Every structure is written in C-alpha cells, then in structure tokens.
Length: 325
Image (cartoon, rainbow, N blue to C red; front, side, top):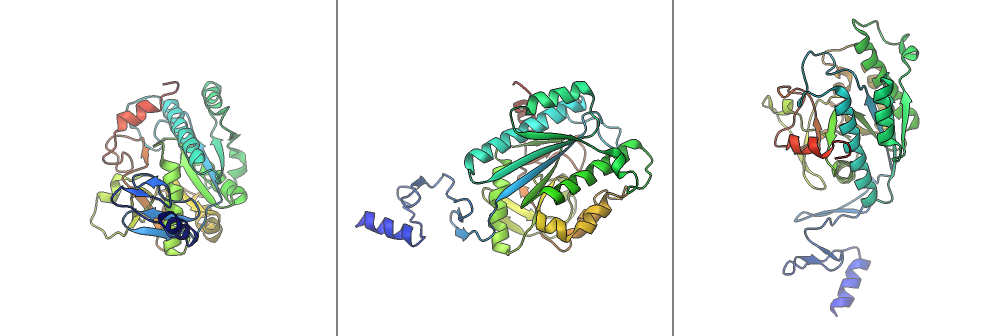
C-alpha cells in the first residue's frame, strides 16, 4: 500500500515528507538535499513548493575586463594590494568554477560566456587566454573607435574606456541574449554555488511575482548605511532583499533590456553621479534584489561602501581562486 501511495502522489504532482526519517520517498532525497526540480518546482522546507511558471532556458554571461587599472576613478589599493591582473585572473577563475558547478547540476541550461577586453597588455592577455582555453569562453576586444561619436568627451581616457566597454557589453547582450543576461566586472570573486543559486532563485521569485526581475550577486555594505524599508524573499538557499541601487554587475533578462534600452544606452554616454544613475532609475519601477549573505565579493578597498560584503571569509575565497592553487 505504501508503494502504491507514493506512486500515486508522484503522478498527482505531490511530494511526501517523512519527518521521522527526515526523507522524501517521492523525491528519493534526504531533506537536507536540494529538493527543487529545475524549471519545474522550487521546494523549501517548511514552506512547501512553488510551481515554476517563469522557466529559464539560457544565460549569456558578459565579463568586462581591464587588467591594468587598479581602481577606476580612485587612488586607492584593493584588498591584498596585488596588481590588477591578479584580480582579473582570480575573478574569472572563480566564475569558471561557478559556471562548471551550475552546468553539472542544471543539465538543461544553456550557458554562453564572453569576455570583452579593454586593451590588455600581451602578457596579461596570454594569462587570460591560458585560463579560458578549455572552458568555451569567447574573448573579444573593446572597439574604442566605434563609441567615440556617441560618448561625450571625458576628462580621462580611463573614463571613456569604462563607458565604452559598458556600452559594448550592453549592446552585445541586447543583440545576442535570448533569456537571462548576466553583466559581470572582473574584480568580483564568486562563490562556487553563485550561478546555480542565482538561476534557481530567479525562477522561484520571478514565478511568485509573475514578472522578470533584476538581481545583484553582491551584498554591498552601502545597503546598511541608512535606515530604509526593504522586502525579503526566500530564494533557493538564502534570503534576498529588495534594493534600489547596483553597480554594473547584475543579472536581468532580454525582455527588460529591450524595455529599458533607453536607460541602458543613456547610462553609457557620460560620467554620471552616481555612475549607474540611469540603471538605478529602472529599480524605481522594477524589482531588484541582492542576496543575504553575499554570493559574490567585490574586491575593492577595505573601507569602501561599494566593496566588501559583510560576514564573508575574504581570505579563504581569495586563496581558493589562485591560479593552479
């Protein structure tokens, strides 16, 4: 009778929880395991399941890379005070680990990754090529000349290059993205589970809200600098909070890029204050969330409100992503 009941529950789409044995016979998993089914249902104890109505088919990851500039627009040293190329290497290495983990877990997901390089030295570029050569990552160069007519004259070449690489990455996402698009800068260290957790949390929360959303993988310190209201969601493995500001590392959808293309484009035409002015305007209308605690660590100066997320073992994440470590 028990076996028949389990089969019937499966056919009807129900899950059975044996709290005595801490086991689900319909899922054939311990309750500490990941109980969710990608693009089907998100299961969180003790909240039950959420039927996934916003399924994810593919993700395009676009990395903006500059291996020379220490901290753009600042005269400060990053945490650990290494040359910028070291941050680029460890950042991309951590991203590769997260992509591989995600693809091993979510077999149906299509992942494409491209790096837009801003005029790296040959020796730095060779290091990056060696890192990505067996990981199906495309490397393209920033086309400075293409954007000179559109971008206003800036005080420094660094500022122009930053705006140009941002615009090229947005255009690439708009022209080549199909579903999720993840814009990533090369000074973030990512946890191994980052990409999987973002995708599973996206499909769960978007299904609950019945709309596409923006997601930031980093829990920035500035989110805690002032008293303000926020909403809390349950993701796949952690809480997420609503925010109204991001930097230029965030995930969204092709649909939302098309809808707000004017904001994306205008944000790249000049140095605004804040730099992400027209992106932040979108979050007054659309939902943007970040994780508690952080899935990615922005490797800036230790005192920066835009940098190190709270309650993260920075040294451990840094050491784990040393090349050939």
